[in-house]
Image (cartoon, rainbow, N blue to C red; front, side, top):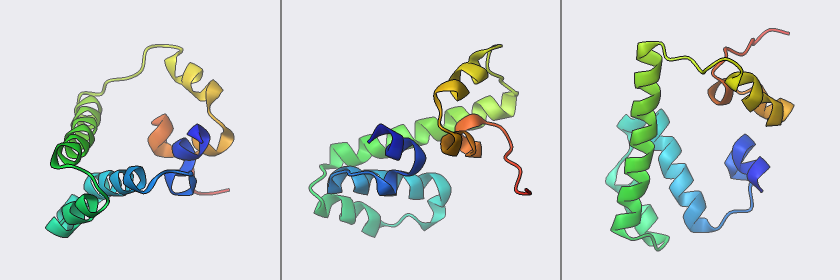
Length: 108
């Protein structure tokens, strides 16, 4: 299951609450202007508490801010760290720009 979550969480065998939280987090991260009260209500309808919804939003926002900060300051991984990370990744995961920090060629 961890492999599915890493590669494509939508294909993982997750409970509806976890899937709902991940869908919300992705929407908040990628298209924040489209997040509406209906998205929060959807999470409530799945049984999430307001505290769980707030935690999901805060954790998502924290990762977004930290990534932007690191990118904005030109922070790079220490020597050897990138290679170590890529060794345990499958080829599919390593081809995803967001997981490796490397630009992925779109040409064959």
